[in-house]
Length: 73
Image (cartoon, rainbow, N blue to C red; front, side, top):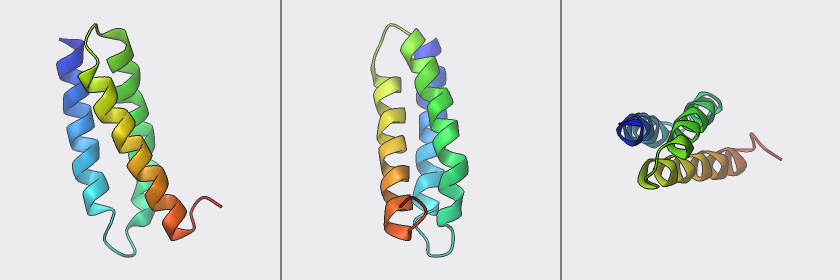
């Protein structure tokens, strides 16, 4: 059950991360990364790894987008 919650949080964060690739919306990654961290935390508690891995992927995508936009030096 926790894995499903983690996958749901990861899917929502991934959709928001895709939207954040639009120019001038890169600031949204500052909100998406903590959301994905919560999902990854829930995914760590569950027995399966798919929810955790999805959230880790979203975190990496968000950090890369921030680096490209100059949000993280």
